[in-house]
Image (cartoon, rainbow, N blue to C red; front, side, top):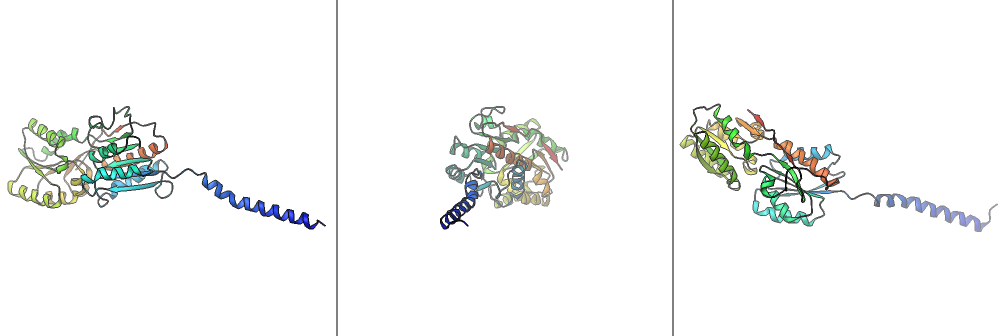
Length: 305
């Protein structure tokens, strides 16, 4: 029969071993890598952006990331106020984000680039990122930015050509732009229209009321067709635009199929939803290996009627 002292020693050893076993899961858990955090900067609001956001999450999922499980997304919405983007981008840069994804045009990408020279940035822009100064080249972006360019400005002439097919006798085309998108877009439209012998009538819209006012003018002046320029604000009002164009019997051409899905006549351009899926893939890969990046260009536009 064991002595009392030996029995006490065994009991202490058993309790000590049990304590070590209970502590083991804590030690293993502490060794797990931290959950990556993706910053998402958009000039629009969440309302009306659900389709693109779903595709962005799909891109993440395709490469092994699921929000709420092994990745966190910090969203910042500018509510169609470009003056808020610099502040929101700086706010994301101060947080421990792995990458910043920008959406809604050129301005969010430039704001993120100005906010950080070290945090990887994945952008979706309609203009040449080299010309914008976001990357050094398409093959080797360099710096901390990469992303998707869908070349909407380069497709302006083709969209005008398609718009003339249902109205071959057209001589006057109304052009609708948002105030934040009046530079390159307007120059491209005016140049393409002049080469086709078309006269353009330019209207600007930065609010829903501005759109109503523009269509009231179209009703009085009766242009032959309508060319809707790109831009996040007009895209967010695509249902209003499609309904008003139908009400005024005004043939209209748009830059993406999202307008056609709301009843618009025709579109010609890259898929914005697929661009956001690709941005999700890029964000995932950048989070894992930021040193291996390329700049993807969406050069294959699609047309919808």
